[in-house]
Image (tube, rainbow over all chains, first blue to last red; front, side, top):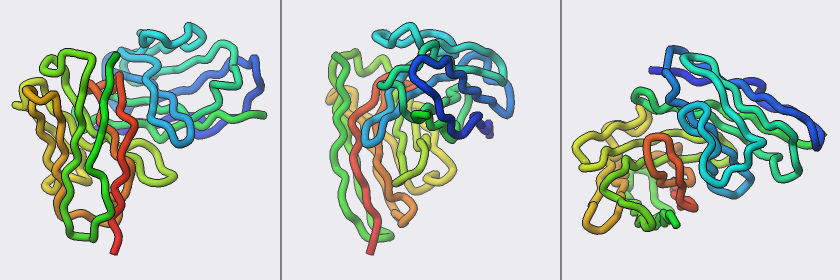
Length: 107
Length: 115
């Protein structure tokens, strides 16, 4: 099975900061990687699919990169509405797996 | 507008059964993979199962394999999750999602397994 890890597990940042979250797969997954944002009590929201493609309606301050085993999600300028937990997911092979999440909160 | 609406959540005793449903609208249902994902209280997301467009291919997470069954009815735009031999650790909010990469999600439905 493919294991997904994320770093850091949490981070504190200020409004306007550039934030980068890393996701690593235990074996190559090509670009079958998605990123999600989840706020407390809400369903996850898809941000990025195929590692670097922005979902319709998602602001361009979000970007994804990577291929193979190492991926990043970058938020170019953090805004108050971006404080949330972020998850990656591989959908290259069964069982599809999520990373453990990265909680982004206010410094 | 894509919409996914789950139903069927409840309080059930350990060892019991429950069937979740998810009704979809706003897209061509029979052209999409569908998935179930769950989230235990205070925990992260856990992939449960996925099913291909015509229902011919299904796969399950290790924690539910042999107990849960995913199915779909393309004529009714509906996705199902039959959950048997429920355990306390199955307590979670269950989400249905479109696709293997989960590009749209339902609002979630709570399943509580407790005596």
